[in-house]
Length: 217
Image (cartoon, rainbow, N blue to C red; front, side, top):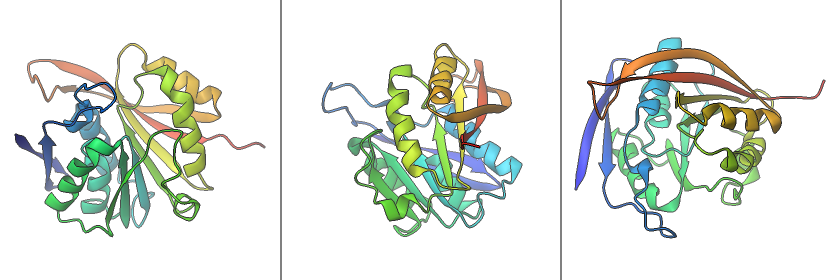
């Protein structure tokens, strides 16, 4: 069964299709990226409210996109030229369905498999054109951060900027510290408290980060 949620971003209602049945082929466990999580909503809302000049006309790549809300919102609501939505293979059909549900063409929303540290599927010529990298709920396992940092390094060029959001919980700061050790400046720029999508009677804190590659002086 599939559920359809609707999220308002910059005055437009975006549809998010949650597809049941996506599992990790190695472990058999359900992939949580099949569902919309609060950090994705926080990131899309932050980008809309801040009216980032970096988004308009940009090529945006979302890393660990899950349902793809921030990347899709960047194009559908905030003026980005195109988005590249990346995640593991079982989640790609859901990403394509969400892009189509919001009227994006394949030229506007390019869906690709990308495992951190294994970025051969993204050609160098495309990587060099990425202006903005979006990440929500990717700070969950410090041991995954070196591979993610390696992929981020290939994505970065002069002028690239990253935006990330995460629920404030144990382990997030450890992930941020590893990224910093691998040459990235990660600065918390906002913190919001909001009711949880899965249980509106409960609320949690969410942090918004600006991510930049540290350049040698």
